[in-house]
Length: 210
Image (cartoon, rainbow, N blue to C red; front, side, top):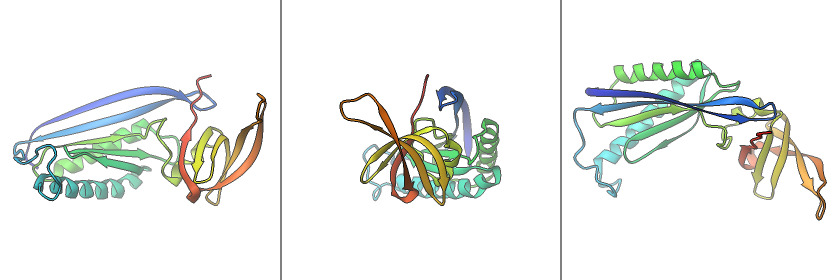
């Protein structure tokens, strides 16, 4: 890869989440490659069909995704999801089945940056970013759920929205102590509901700052 300059930056922010008010650090590592050969047709609004640059970015994204998927498992990590912008910003959000270690995420990011340095990833400039999903992001992967047992979740299905403590996860079925408020009363009753994972449209952690 023909690189004239590389910029690396770290950023941390913290939030208190969960019933035990643990402090969770949301980690972001950014590695930006500025290449000597710049594209000449990266005009804003250009269609993907007309722009070799955007086609190149799509192929690069596929190559990066394959690399991340292959190597993440060796570090106890997995890709939750990723995004690609037309300007060449690739964001990969990683998590683990246990509490996410910032040390492991940092080491993995360094490993990937070394792999990119040694590989052929074209001559177009691009920004590569690895981050934890963040406390307010939806739980997208089935492997994310078990470690959040004991926390309160908001779960949306096609038929209904549930809110309450997440108490069990067996055979891809979540058990929630759903909070039901009686009409005209302040009292909240709890009813146990079981929700198959494949029926979930969106699941998020209910943050508690008490």
